[in-house]
Amino acid sequence: MLHSMVLTSRKHTRSLGLSRHISSSRLTIERTTDNTRFENRPPKEQLKFGTTFSDHMLMIDWDIKNHWNTPRIVPFQDLKLSPAASALHYGLACFEGMKAYKTIPDESLCLFRPDRNMNRLSNSMERLQLPGHDFDKNELIECIKELVRVDEKWIPTGEGYSLYLRPTVIATHRFLGLSAPENLLLYVITSPVGPYYKSGFDPVRLTADSHYVRAWPGGTGNCKVAGNYGPTMKPQALATEAGYQQVVWLFGEDDTITEVGAMNIFFFLINKETGRKELVTPPLTRGDILPGVTRESILELARSWDEFDVVERFPTMPEIRQAAEDERLLESFGAGTAAVVSPISCIQYKGVNIDIPATGDLTKRVWNEITGIQYSKMEDRKGWNIRI
Image 1: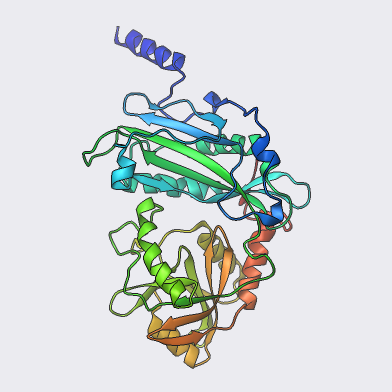
Image 2 (image 1 turned 135 degrees about the horizontal axis):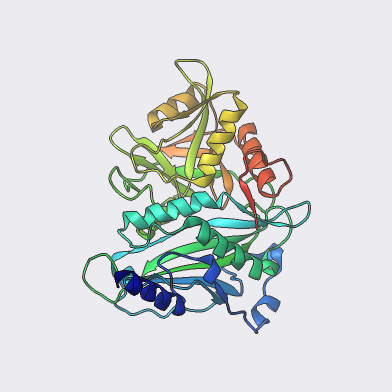
C-alpha cells in the first residue's frame, strides 16, 4: 500500500511538471515574437556594461511543497513580487557573474568554467540558509546552455565581446519574519557586453585610506551575496571624489590587504627574505575572500609555468610600501570576470601615493592566456572551455 502511494505521488508530481531537483529535460521555451528590442540594440562598439538585455531569461521557482518547479525560458520581463518578499527586507539574495563566448576560429559557443560558478552559487545559497542549495549543478548548466542557444544572435562576435550571464536567486516568500524562506526564484538574465578596455590596458589608481571594511572572518566575504555590495558604494564614492578609481580593502590593525573593489588582488614582487620572485594573493582560509573563478585560473596557470613562486598569503600595506621603496614591487593587478585583469599603477596609503609599474609583462601574459583559452585562440589543455 505504501509503495503504491509513493508511486501515485510521483506520478502526480510528474503530471504537474514538477521535480524535487532542477531537471533540464523538463525545460520549456516560450520564444518572443517581438523583434523590436533586437533590432533597436546599440551597435556592439557602443555597448555599455549591464544596460542592454537579450530577449529571453531563464526562470525556475522553488517552493517548500514541490521544491524545484519546471525550468522555463521566457521573454525578458519584469518580476512580480510581493512587497513582503523576504529578499527585499533581509537581503536574502545571491548571484553569479559568468560569460558565454563566440570563439574566434569558428564562432562556436562556449562557457568558461561554469562548474565553478555553480559551486559558488550553491555555497552562497547555503550561507543564506536558502533551501534548494543542493541543486543539481550540471542540470542548471544545461538549462543555461539552452538559454544561450536561444539568444545566440545577441552574442557579439570578435575578441573582447561576450554575453554576460547573471544567475540570481532571491527569496520571494511573503513573510516579514526572519526565517528561512518557503519560496525562491532562480533566474538568469543575459546582457551583451564589449571589451572592458576599449583601447589597450587602462591602469587604475587605488586608495587604501578608507576606514570602511568590506568583509571579516565569519562574515559573508567568501560568498557572492547581495548584501556584500551595497555597503561598498559609499567608500567607492569617496574614493572617486579623492581622484581614485577603486578601494583597496584592508582588515586588522596590521592593514592586511584583502581585495580591491569587487575583484581579487595580486602582487608580483621580489621576496625580501628569499630574493625570489613571487606572485602573492590573499588566501581563502579566513573566509573573507571571494573564491574568484579568474583568481583560481590565474593561480593554476602560474603554477603550471613553474617560473616563480606562487603564494597564497595575506600581504600588508606596510609590506607593499616597503617593497616599492626597495624597488622590489614589480607589478600588481586585480582579477575578475568583467575585466579578467585590471593593472594597478598606484595605491594611496596613509596619504602617500605608492607608484607601481604598469602595465607589467605578467599582467599582459595572464590576460593573453586566459582570453586565448576563452576565445579558443590557443589550446585549452585544462578543459576549462565548455562547448555549448
